[in-house]
Length: 309
Length: 240
Image 1 (tube, each protein chain N blue to C red):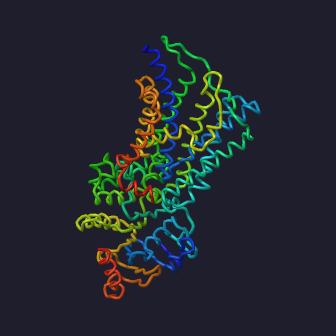
Image 2 (image 1 turned 120 degrees about the horizontal axis):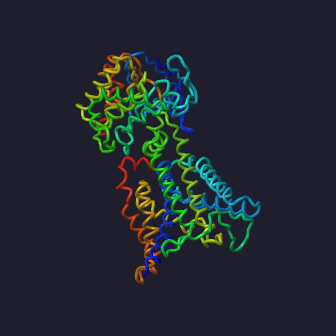
Image 3 (image 1 turned 30 degrees about the vertical axis):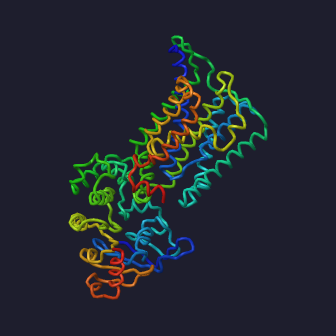
């Protein structure tokens, strides 16, 4: 197998990892700070993409500006979901929470469909990233893939140190670890919970904007019915990656996104039947992670109790 | 210094505090006693602004703090140690202290100075600055919780169940440190189920039952009130 092909597949895998990572970071941030398993994450990112589609299609707004607007809409959608729905429901049974999250996801997916005014079939989406390909020592690399990887790495490189070292990042972690103690230290817990949702949702919007308008390479992308289903096809790997860290550890979620992105993509090179059953393997991996109750490795019992109650 | 007047609190449709009035003077240690579910923690939460009042008034140093935000109350110098280990388990001891100084905002110098002063009172913590708080022993966590609450230089401390789950030796240590702060003018309200412990350090006591104050007076007087103390002893006895 020529190295150029392996490299190409690796790059596609890395770009996929980047997108999964941005989604997974949002899932972890939201779960850690507010205890919500955000199954609406995909849909919140989707409304950002739909905003982009509408702005570039109908009003001819420059694509980059439209993309920025899309991210902003996702941020608002996430803040809305937290403020109107999730902040008001006490932490009840896990099943109830999950149903509510699915409901919120269905709501946003319905809004997305409404905004597209029932356009059936597939909608062509113009890209906002350059469509050039670069030839690197015999390997053809697409600029959009490279930029996706850079943006993903950049997001993590900005977010993780901010969480670790800044006063507000520390405040957000405090709210996540002991909400009452944080409040008693003078930290506005509700505001920081909303901030976590906004950051996570913005990343979701960004991730889907890097994906959908570029899924067909230089020609752009396609928004189809498949994307409008609440549990989008990337939600599962995103949660899988987050589950590597028990929905709690960000570094582990990043490692997880490499597994569900890069490794999964590289499995194409594996002998059959492994290569054919890549998706099933992903499913199996997620089931194993759930059974392992990976959160035990990343948080004390006290913290886990606090998240559930 | 602290005046709670005629406070009612409800959780939704259920009223849990009925006309509660409490006073704490400067440099005083006051005990708030009562059985489980008597409403002691709710009183503290109302004072700290975490829970709203349906009626009544709370004033601190002659300023009305009814309805003030938790942050404003912390900034005024009224700090609470919550029950059940008020530390951030995933953060180091140092980070916990830094969060304790959150209200210093961007005044990093002042925060650092306050933390340094606190560490002089808690040398054991100084040896473990980089240790994750969740890996500390129960007594050390409670010590950290106390230290953390001293970083914003409180004028009045509300302590919810200081001794819960701790060995008497450790509790004595904590009380010793607490007494030193009281000598410097910090007032304290201790909520305790351990009556003897509370009465050993408090000058005055309030006894609560089912959301109301049933007794208030000098601590020694409470010693003679078998009718009240029996309820508490029975409750703690059946708790095992």
